[in-house]
Image (cartoon, rainbow, N blue to C red):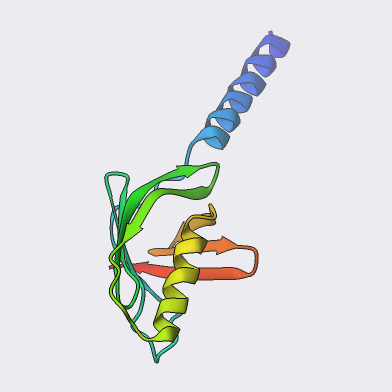
Length: 127
C-alpha cells in the first residue's frame, strides 16, 4: 500500500514538473519604455499586443510579429519607417533592429522585461 501511494505521489510530482517546464513564458501585453537609456537619446519604446510588436526607436517607428519560443523573443516581418535622422540615432536603430531579430532571451520580473543576447541587454518597464 505504501509503495503504491509513494509511486503515485512521485509520478504526480514528475508530471507537475514536466508541465511547468513546458509552459511558455507569457509577456504582459501593453506599452514598454526603455530603462537603461543613454540620457542624450530618447528612450526606446515597445508595444506588445496580440503577437504584434510595434516600437519607436528614437526617430522611426517599427512594426512586426512576435512570439516567445523556449525563452527567446522571436520577431518576424519587422519593418520600419525610413525617416532620416542623425547618425547616432540611425546607428542605434540599426543595432536595436538587428538585436530584436537575433532571438534574444527574454525575462520578465517586477514589471521589467529584460532582453539579452551575448553582451547586449535592454530593459523595458511596463507602463
